[in-house]
Every structure is written in structure tokens, then in C-alpha cells.
Length: 236
Image (cartoon, rainbow, N blue to C red; front, top):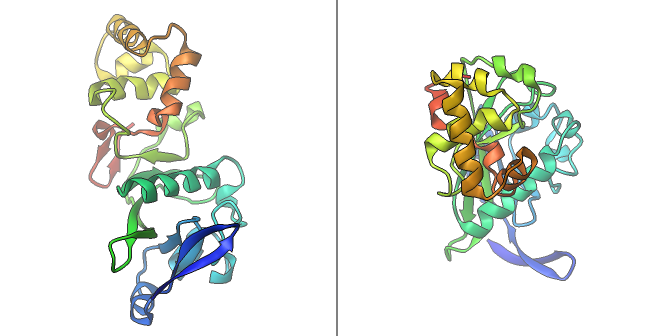
């Protein structure tokens, strides 16, 4: 089922050959499903995924990475590059990733994307499987700020910051004032100011730009704290 391919430079990557029974099964799902190889190229997609990207047929995705696909989802920001980066992280770490995707210029609703490593019979990671779930109820009042990323992580990147740290940081990183943040978290502005000062000291910086750079390097700018998510409900 798996053979070595040398299509991308001198690097050999496993070629994924799916059983027809698996293809027939995934084709029946109404939710988007795709399978990618170690180069982030689509080796399988169902029509639900094609429709999500606003495309007409599978040939517009198969054999291509997200950077190469001509979908309006990838027109206005670094979504394609971010997906490829996430794919590499998943295949190298062997850990799944769950993201909240919000791209109002391309898709009319937020949706959850699950990415898991794809293994062969020898337990070797040869790619990843991506499947999507819709959110049925949501509020997005904070998007008037215009600073939020289109792809949110639902798994905390590491253990450097606590979940409570992340709740306060979430608003701070969007440029929301201490007063607004305090109102949303039912705290005083002075408490928020002191809290952020403590976090700046923890990181070892004194300016917002340096704090943002640290958070971007560790993907905290994309992490959506669990407090802001309810079952089928986003609470901003």
C-alpha cells in the first residue's frame, strides 16, 4: 500500500495509496475530510471539503498544498502558510491539533478543524487526516477590532502560561484596553494592569511589541482559552 516516492527534490517521502473501501466511506460524509502526505499535499479530499473551499471539483485540490490551491480562503492572509506549518508540526510531533477557523471573507460561519497524524501498518507517520465540524451558534462581537487571526488553536501550545494567563492575554494581544478587558472578565482595570505587568516580567520584556513577538513565536496569539468556548457556542 505504501511505497517510496521521490517527487519532491531528493527527499523521499512515503506515497499514500488509500484502499477503495476507505475512499468510498469518506466520500459519503457530509463533513469535509482530507488526507495529506508529509509534504502537505492533498492525496484525498471529499466533495464537502471541495465545497468548503468554494471550489468546483477535487482536481483543484489533489496533489496540491494549501499554498497552491486557488481558493478565496487563502487570498487575504497567511492561512495557507499557517496550515502547512501546522501540518509539519503535527507529523513531526505525532500529536493531534484542534483549531477554530474564522474566515468571514470565504466561509459564512466558524468551524472546528481537527488534524491527526496518519499512520501506516508499521506505525510510521506518513501524513495527516483533517476533518471539520460546524459550529451552529456563535457571537463574534469582538471582531470589530479586526486583529484576530483566522485560525485559532484550541489546544494550549505549551505550559509556559496558565489558562488564566491566557484569558487575560487573549484580549491584550488583540489590542483591547485594560478597561474593556476588565469589564469582560469582571475584574478591575488596575487588576488587569498588574496582571499584565507580571506576565511581562515573566517573559522578560517591557514593551507590547516584544511581548507580542514572544507570544507569536510560541503560537499563544492563536490560542483561544477554554473559558470562551461553550458547547456549540462561542462567548466573546
